[in-house]
Length: 152
Image (cartoon, rainbow, N blue to C red):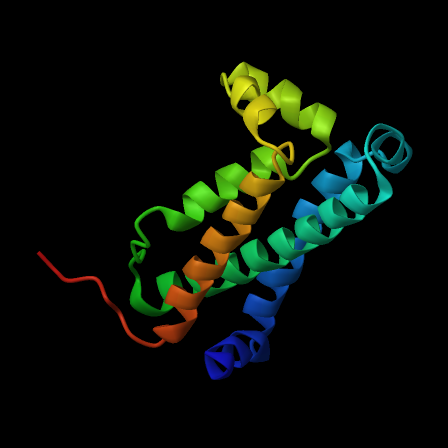
């Protein structure tokens, strides 16, 4: 797996895709995140846990995009990961922002009631999103050089 990840970072194209993806997600997060508001409404530890979990999410998603683009270009097919990456991205995108933004976004899709029931206010969903992206990266990078899609 490490060998396959290093294969991605040896190429200028895939390294550029990783960096652009990471910076785009980081920029979006940075635009919506208010440090003082987060410290004021939450405690310091939760704010820092949120920042670290967001950086992990951004890294994993950018790594996944680089690997997926490599497989698409190499095999000219999209590998089906059972939608795990998509679920992880959706969950991470909705719940990685600031808590007040999360409630606003979640209320549009009817999830604010669910968030109020969770004991840590959505941190559980962040962990689930990170775990799904970890699994998706594991699946891609263990079989990076093989095509697992069967022709019909």
